[in-house]
Image (cartoon, rainbow, N blue to C red; front, top):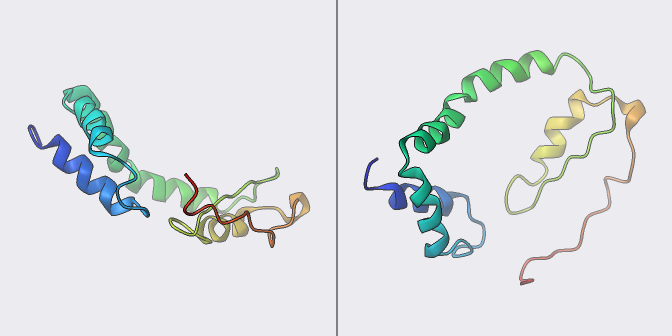
Length: 111
């Protein structure tokens, strides 16, 4: 990884970007700069290493309904309806508020 921080950050961001080029090479350079610090790099990778435990924790958490209102926000370009689909089974319907059929305005192309 040493010496390839910019390449890693650039490819990672490119794989997630909906609007290609929204994260500039200068932005990538800033993120990559911080990954040159071994402690920050280690912490960054620890986030990914935690996924297996997150999966186990979520399996346990799913068994109990949430007892408070839940705000779930997705976007067409990223998670879309997945966020609402993930929350729906664990929310308690008695705490449902709002009108999920309403959609925010399409802001694509807005600076």
